[in-house]
Length: 558
Image (cartoon, rainbow, N blue to C red; front, side, top):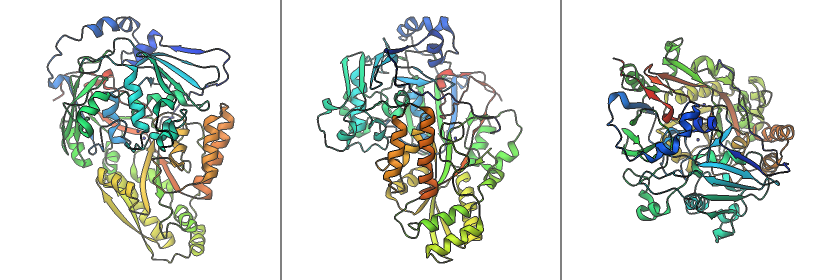
């Protein structure tokens, strides 16, 4: 698990006070949308007959049926229980599906579950699996595949960064911590092979969004036990999504091919090739010579030149770029120094030189989402920055290291921060940059006191942003822990009143970005993408989800 156009999103808030069971069943239009059918009811009604006809050999891939897109680096992993970076997004969300998914308006709609119910107290969810779904090797999908996946996600051995997403399930956090070893005591069960029951310890306002995210996708126990840690390699991985993993050449490309056993409706893509291109300029050359159909992560210098082109598209994105601090490392351990750095950066200039529609922000929760606060966070004040530095005890000329990926945009931004801090408070920031995988490893090791990172939404609820910095979060790279912050975030999670949640998020953000400055939110930005005109049906939602099953390709343009 990123404007000239404003973001308008419907955030689903569970009422938690219903008198009767609420049952959500896919209407025909919603089903067809979830399966990439452009909301055609007659096509949705014919799903079962089409699924049963999948034994017909798929047509061979040709240039007309091959879709190419850029990956800015190698994925850290294709194990969807463990994956946690944006590089994996387009791969995992096209190889696999979850119980539910999001439509274009961020409403939750059926996917592998055809329906679900929520108990009157808001603590029990029951999902009924869609009939006739098969894995790519022809084995029927069963509830046990979800139970195994969620157990593995919560296992301490897996060390999954996103395990905390399930901590509201009864007994889940205790299982993760090893206090419970019997998984039958965790509130995840399957009364039969087509039903999944989830019991929460408390009603959670956003819980129905959790099963949309890739870490909760089903997983075959027999495949993992047969192949061990190599189960996610080509020829071993099995999938239930519209594509399967055909090949992976390190530092070169990842090839997906149409899954012949996919239950849903697909466009005409037979092969999808993710070209691993680390250099932005090289990627643009590949696009302009027709070797890439879709390109995001465009170099800032090129965005200025490309402005106004009809093939340059904007998509809304729930994303915040930020500067993070490992708060126990000297001299960043000084709150006064952290505040001095924050006050010395003129964030309003970021959009001027990145040319990507970036908007300065002090709020970690992005614009377009409940809890966004445009008035929070330190502003630009060089005089106040100097006063904070004088109170820190840190001398002018002190050298502090900042780590970033070596992507052009991030290096440009890091150099801007370096110049601002040097100019306004005289602190020397040394930039260390690495390829994506090495950079992530450095974050895991807390190797540098400052890091440049971003967070984009996995689901459209502010809890997804604020829970990143909970004390037990596997995605918290700052070593910062604060019990007041934790309490407010959890109170907001369990509160069913939208106004009360917003107040709690404002209070929690104040602790995070004002009182203790564990991070400095910098900007929000849209997705900018170059798209070949032959590609029809491309929609990238505010979660950076690209559903390739919705795409139809025309002839190659010379």
